[in-house]
Each structure stands twice: as structure tokens, then as C-alpha cells.
Length: 66
Image (cartoon, rainbow, N blue to C red; front, side, top):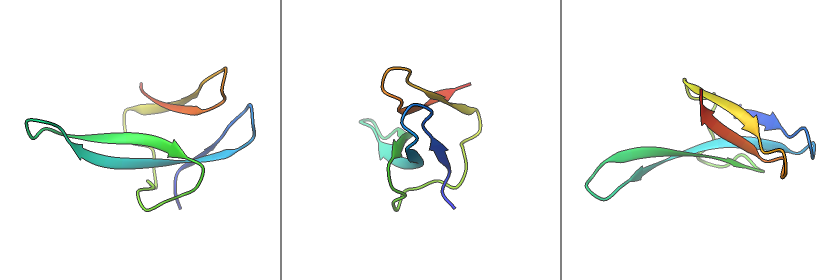
């Protein structure tokens, strides 16, 4: 089951995704993002060291290091 969060403002459910990206110079980083549907890159749990917050104006979830 993909990790999900429900927006307090809109009530819509968002699913956490992660994608590995290679930067110039060969350094690899993981990009995290929320989407309205669970896709191929959906994660089952919140990465360690991160917390979910919500943008007060738009209601979109944000992933922050905590």
C-alpha cells in the first residue's frame, strides 16, 4: 500500500513517490513528490528523517527534512 496523506484544506488524497535522478558529475539523488494517484514510483513508507507538512495557501502536501 502506497504512503498517502489527506489534505486538510481540500480533503483530497495524495500519494508519495520517489524517483532516482543522476546529476551532472554522476551524483545520484532521490526526488520525492506527491501525486493524486499511486503510480509506478509510489513509496510504501515515509523516508526516514522526513516529515509531511501542508502548504497553508494551496493545501498541497510537502516533504521536509525533520
